[in-house]
View (cartoon, rainbow, N blue to C red):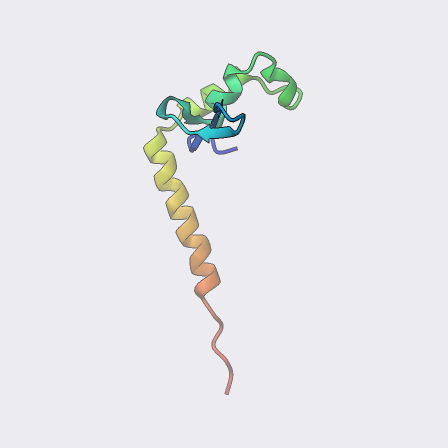
Length: 90
């Protein structure tokens, strides 16, 4: 799980006609770890031996900006592998 990537979580609103509409308010933008930590029974979704506190400590080791930069570098290296084609023998 990417501990630094923000996600938009929907808020469902039922209008007067009974139609469910989803909105994405700014206060619902959070990382998946933040959303998981707010669940009442979050521990049941984790593997045995892993705690929310462990994940939060791991996320605190690097800033969001540094994590994004590292991901961009890794993505560039991966795409360079895709774009590199072997030269055809003539």
